[in-house]
Image (cartoon, rainbow, N blue to C red; front, side):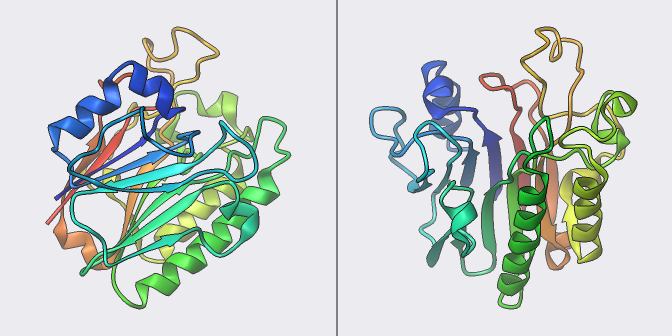
Length: 252
């Protein structure tokens, strides 16, 4: 089965370009995870005839945050949020439970340029890991989405210039280290050990994507019980429509 995750930076915008509809219509992916959707419903935006659709919008303001999960197989259960209103009201997490594993769609907070939301994000990190660990006691966990952090210097084009900036602070990067120590695998790194592979390019510099001045901040992690079942993982760098590129995971 193939899973697809994409921060669309506004579902309406990417739908107008017909890019997300192409992905859905292809039916290549059994599960599609979308982040920063910024909508409350999909009616009139995309069609999803062969998918079950689950939406977690922001409750605090329109046009902000939000996640949507689509899957061909109907899940056993759907969990909205992580049990903390501070984050659930922003529409950041949907979990689908299937027979053999959980699939978490996650949109991690951005710590902001002035780092005014760094402590908020670090608390989210703690809570979502506790949530993941609780689920993992029942069955393996897959978590995909926008983590809003570049883990190492291999994951960012200009590490020295961005040291200490939002998404590349020591505490944010340490979180990924700790996640790996707990037994979660960065599936991309199972297949690619090199730098220069990015999933986000800022709109501030118009030539950032053309010149590949980017960050790898979108991931698929799996609990290590699934390691031997992971067949492929990567970044679909050629997919346009958002400032992010989608990431994918193929699992047996």
